[in-house]
Length: 93
Image (cartoon, rainbow, N blue to C red; front, side, top):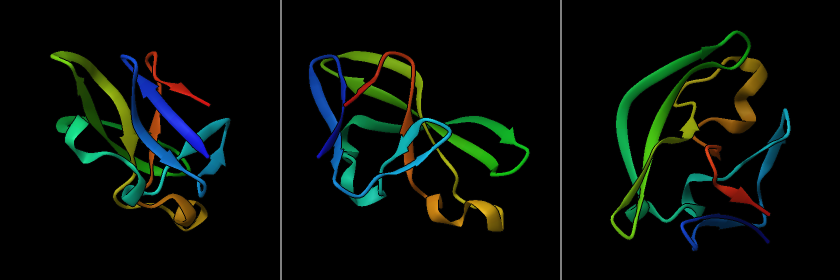
């Protein structure tokens, strides 16, 4: 089971992640939605598409843009459509 942990709290766990470019992408059903707040940040990957971001909020602390996902993807990235990946101090192990 792979877990994403931030601020001493498990915010996602799955035995069905997809690893791309060293990042574990978690299925949307395996993230704990109560910790995720959508925001207006977007970036573009030349081969995956436009990423959207979440702020992670745990115990009154906010980690801005710490999770991202691709709501729509190119045909090359169809395996991660809607899946969530992490950075900015979120431990994935």
